[in-house]
Image: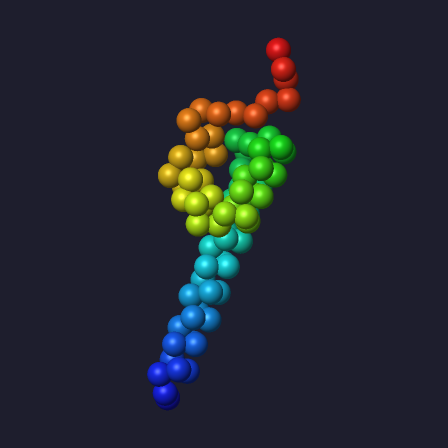
Length: 75
């Protein structure tokens, strides 16, 4: 095997793992009972648009970073 093949194979494996991690995080967001539907959509879009940062914030700060909640009730 030449080096080019090995690097391509490694890139494919890393890419698949990265995509699987994004899908996993989005599935965790969708199944979360702590979020309402609007919050789920916002989190899912954030993770899809900014996969690395969105995933890190989700795992480090949780579904409600800094206690921020999006409520439909404007009292």
